[in-house]
Image 1 (cartoon, rainbow, N blue to C red):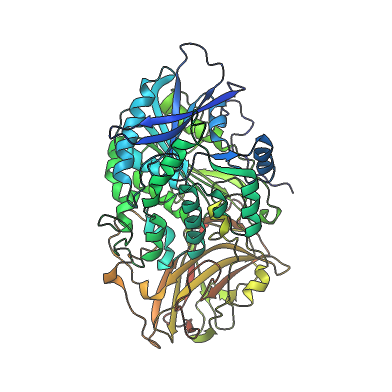
Image 2 (image 1 turned 90 degrees about the vertical axis):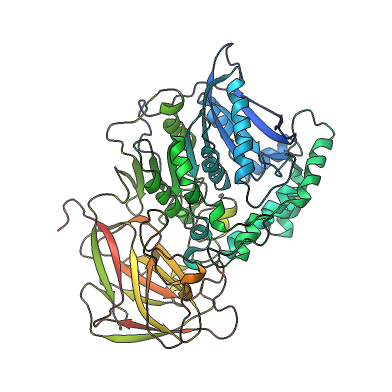
Length: 617
């Protein structure tokens, strides 16, 4: 069978934006802000634009870099062949009839100034001046959209809070709504991601791009192919670039703050102002985003750490008729088709991301509606079935709950079993590997998210497996696991994996969750609408583990959509470590021992959100 993640509208002339221009041209320059700080920009326009023609504009504000200064065209082509070069969004958008502007924020790339850990205020002020400049240009139709991946998606939401009249729509992609929940899922620090991104940020800020690479061989290759950060047109001797980078010496590191805090209300130690992670979180800016009146497209991938949950929460909390949500079979950035059925092939995505974004922006920026028949506000991809589906809301209507209970003999059953216990000594070497949803692909997006050797990995875990399914089961939405247990250490981490085991015994990870046991307390009043379980993670909610005392722990698994085929089995696997991706809890000393209680009056179970199947018995 041939699988594809191509869009639901692919091949439909009504829904497909036409290519209007074959060639494009990119120029760069400095824009001077009202306080004298100069920001570096790249502007991409269609080549040969007729006199008097006016275009809508898409803008991205980046804390990274606009691009690299290659040592000749061969070097750029070689990196592109290796899959290491950035996708040219400017060219893609310009060919579809848009102007595209990339702005390096203060302290980034070739821009002057310094970068603050909390940069909302400066970004909103500078963003307003940049938008003023855009609408004054002869090629501008006066309407602007903002988009970007990861931190660039975060800045698009910040930009909306300025309520500039030209900004009509934003499409934040693969990014955060609640910073604490996104990078401390379940209260556990994603140390691999933060190590990788921190190294890259400092290398980019200072123009030493080779230092972003992980190995000496990679560093040498980049030094041979890349001079450094690309300056602006006219800076022939690089003096302006060097002067800008000298000002970056005093940059603050938001990633350092993320890694330093443990709790939601911890002060950020590297910030020059009093702040917490919530200060930088879009959920705190939600009233201004809503008041701006911008249309919002929340854009995520099922294999992108916990960021798809962030995009779901953004959509749920904006929730107007113009808002949209997409959830595809992608890791960070969507360059790779990463459904576990094809992830090992490392195949490129066939989904035209630029065209889909233009389809969203068109109604708001040039009064063109490209929706096809039956197109709802929510589009999601069901893995295992490998098919796009749609719904008017999230979670999709019609879901039912199937509760499956953990059984002491390693079973996973529908009926409540007899009360019993199972003991598990945590294997501190257990891991999902460096390429899992929380792995290295987050810092580059050029590799598939994948779980190699899962059968071997499961041998380090405690698992509970069902009998072969008598019908197909589609799990779509937010599963919740409730585990009754004791732990013999003062704190520990708990990892839960839902797996699809084929008739030959090969397991694929459907979804997962993690939780620091001392942060198991649940809150009654989340600060925004949530799907699943809310763990506040503040200092007042810390509940120390008392060794030997029974605990009820609830974990909401990362949302997904997955079809488990008839004859396959469901497995719930439990671990106490993911050594390649998360900080160990406890950090030193002996490994914890869990005693898992199953059955009886207080059973351990998982609630699966199940979408009924047509024709199922």
